[in-house]
Length: 231
Image (cartoon, rainbow, N blue to C red; front, side):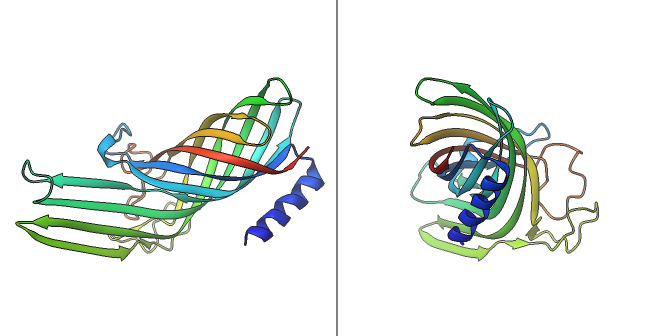
């Protein structure tokens, strides 16, 4: 799969002109909005990952268009303690779906010395859920328990307002949102910080995404890129 993606992006780059193609990997600090204004709770942040292949295409001397394919972890966690003790009478849960994410970023480069640059970028993304796990573990009155299950996605048409195959134990397969980020290109490595702002309510029974900003993905990422093609 990795070789296919490299060949595909390489063909695009040589056909349309490129500034670089790079492999990216990093850590995601994922969360889900809890109130109508889209705010999250810090204690619910789940550490997960992103990895994939991205290419930048020249628009002008300072502007690139960036796209590619990422395997992107989302979700959140929760911890509840029923007493002051942390080794008993607690319940911990994790919700960690995985998505194939396709971003489309406009990148503005600010040149530095030796062909290095700092950059800002923003743009939309689309993502499709492919897998993931949901788990619960805890200890009540000295008795341990744990369970794990696969996350279920609804089979919905993303281009209609109707929620096909909706159920309370399923999340929407398709997610849409926007990325905002910045970084520095040091030549041999690229360092990036990104904030992913989800526009889609993730539960499959929610049909009105604009009613409020509750129940949407909020993800901060730190990533490292290694160029494999550069012009």
